[in-house]
Image (cartoon, rainbow, N blue to C red; front, side):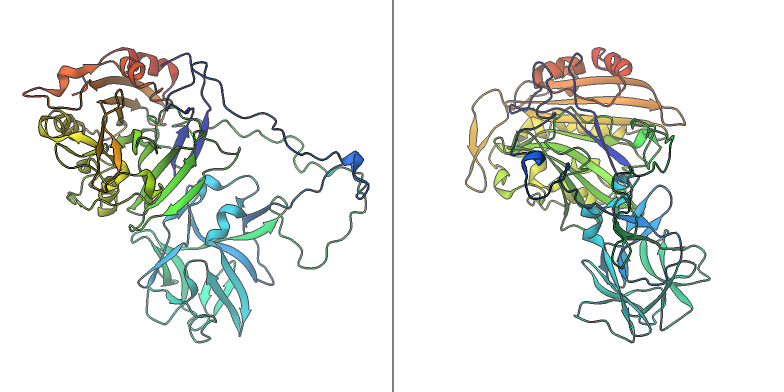
Length: 535
């Protein structure tokens, strides 16, 4: 759908950027594409010239704190740090503990700025280093004191109020890293083969020493622990550290970011406006109850809507499972967007979890427990679309991923046929199949769900698919698309899904969303206006 402006906010999340544009109170685009909010805001701004107390021309500026990489030896290592595995693409932070290892499920690469990692993001994972005994103790958020008990290739956890002097004391240096004081033959490392933080021998060449980021103030400068000197020349501007700085390039999907493989990125995300301050990467990150699962939420200008991206970990990396626009008034996602690629979202045949549960990233009272009788819990992202591991599949059984869908000869008929062909035709190499799907509410049908609540019943469904091709640099070279519109939420007796094919443009006119908003305009126009049989 062309001729509509949208907010081009590209959020790099663990190498998989998430792109959000414009949504309105009806769940569709504003007719004029006007950006809501923005610009200068009103308020109770004080006039500094009328303030008799400070006599200053400018209001005081709050200090901004960052975590910056430690690149030189420190005489005193006390302070607050992030313990990470950093490889130039990812910054995996020590964020939890599992049995006898530290976990690194969180990638902070997308949060890194020219000044460092903002403290409001990094603080939730900080490790407090304090002088203790003959070395330092390290207390990590969500873990406790970490140490080494002498068991090879492991890490110990101490949740008491004080460190154990026998196991929890460390020697720290830039050259040697974090070494248990009780055994000089080991150091804290990241194991890429079996993704985890643990203590390994120095001879373990397949493991990588940790990288430390220290909490600092004022554009990343590490503060002097002593009193600050007064400004001797307050009227002189600070010298420009770089008189000819290179401007940061505008992020382009498929060309920049930690993951340079454009065919693994989220080109399909529809347009939807988020109500967030500039530079804030997400509203909230939720640590889900599933192993390795994190959800990222983005507030919409419509307070009854929320954008959620569910992620999981697979083979040492964080993977975006799917992204949705959830609407509280409909108790359902108005669209869900995801990619299909046999190497990235691979099939390990983990089966169907069949354990429906409330989505931890969405208020419980927004969600429906699902309907029985003729309407069953119809997946929007199919269970068989996500078979890489148990967590990936379980996320498809969140109640936010279902809508009341007519079961006989629809959910188990044409809808299931289409799902199977999408699954069977997921590509490899540098092509990716992108899918966006959703319900329509064109009447006032309601049912009582399993929780005894009244829930709207969709009147129709749609699904749009685009096959995107890329060159070796990740640049999109071609795109082909097709849409499907099922005009009733009822039985399609003896029918075939391909009888309901149309163009993506036609579906956009029906559903009101600007789909595949990241795809370059020329390729998007062609793919959306021509109905191409993809399989």
